[in-house]
Length: 370
Ligand SMILES: *Cc1c(COP(=O)(O)O)cnc(C)c1O
Image (cartoon, rainbow, N blue to C red; front, side, top):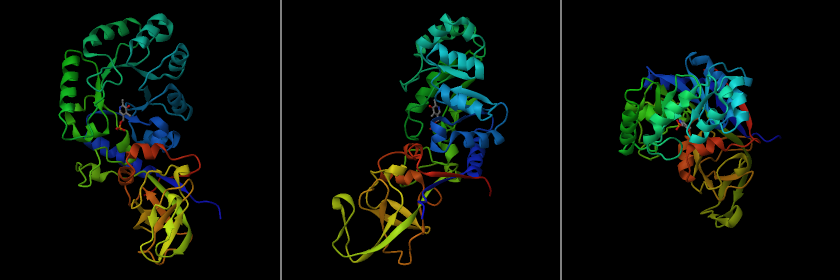
């Protein structure tokens, strides 16, 4: 029997989630964020599916020039914005060749454009303003000067203005309001297009919608807000549909006696004679090694608990409530019926990291029906 460990990517759900973006921000243009191999879902298939439902005015956003070139290679015609911009003259040649838009966030990039006037010609730019995240962007006091310097290099004159919010995922924080207000002050009087909102801001901070929204995680069906068991949310997050379902199979069902222990380190002890299932997935597939005993797993659609340590190729599960489970039965680790947010919270991380971390050993299957 060959190992069946699979990520099923539901492109219909992806398109549905894009419709949720449009519902939340109906007047805005969309920059669909497909960095990091579309959050681990496969950039080519994801971008092609989104391109079917985006308008010609909408765009894609990626982190690197390489990712932008990859999108052109698979036939994407929309604008592509590189969120980290460029850092070499070779990058500028690719930007020209493939008609790539860039975020300018650092003076070194402006200097490079000044030195390479020919390559600067007509490049489409976004100027990034640091309103408090302190990751990328120009300080508020430098924006006017940098905007003018950038304009003088000969880039396309329609330079957009953007910023990024550090706490949009926390609906109780006052920091987003402060960042939005500072941004509005800086850009007031400039007719340029604006962009501030990631997924959490699209759903939680309408004042941040600007002209362009930048949805990432919500496209993949994950609630962007800080995880809480009360399900802190917004009525739109409940309509998001998970795009990736990670599944495997039961490869053994064993009777283990009371007081025996399970797996490496013998961290879990059987309270009674019981059935223990072995599932064909482990940290070598991207299932988080830090998921503790008790983390939920679906066997034949019903919740059971992970028991013992996650190993490279396998996990064990408590089958006391699943007397009929047998070798070959389907096991879902996250996705349909089991939110990745819940697994991430159990493992001390966020859904983004789990989705990005699925490894090449896992078979990816794309479906686009329903
Ligand atoms: C990744 C990223 C986004 C998308 O964020 P989500 O939380 O996934 O919606 C938006 N803007 C910038 C600048 C980013 O780096």
